Amino acid sequence: MSGFREHITAGIAVGTTYNVVNVFVLETLKTNEYVLIPFASCAIFSIFPDIDIKSKASKFFYLVSLVAEIWLFYQNNYLFAAILGIVLIIPQLCNHRGIFHSKIMAISLPVLISILVTSQGFINNMMAIHVATAGILGYFTHLTLDRLVFH
Image 1 (cartoon, one colour):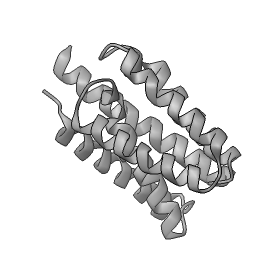
Image 2 (spheres, rainbow, N blue to C red):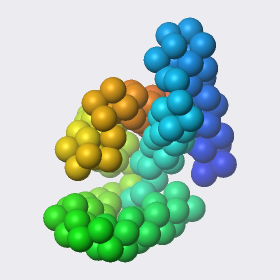
Image 3 (cartoon, one colour):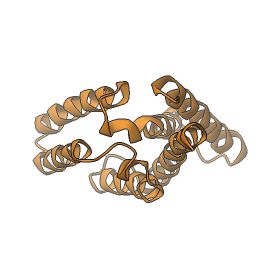
């Protein structure tokens, strides 16, 4: 059965491959920030679909979300903090291998998050493309591992 270790290992491998292609072949990622953010996006989305169960992945996400909420309140960004808080409730209302294990979610969630963080000024448009692309690759990595094991 694919668990946290398998999913995160695959996400790290795919994220590394994504960065190698973009740094050395396409030459689109030039700075450390531009390398780390897509890598992190790929790794995070490779474990994200398991947020709807009590797992190492969900504990990680809720811990990171708590830190993000505190930081957003400290920055007086109450709207973004409220949106994040509402979104964090949704996984608890879903069944495992339901909506968070769908191909539509694998594409739409990384794209929506990259649009949202771009609109808040956290990243620029070029980085948003890398975040979304790497996130989609990481998400599909998770879905592929689950499909190999469960179908």
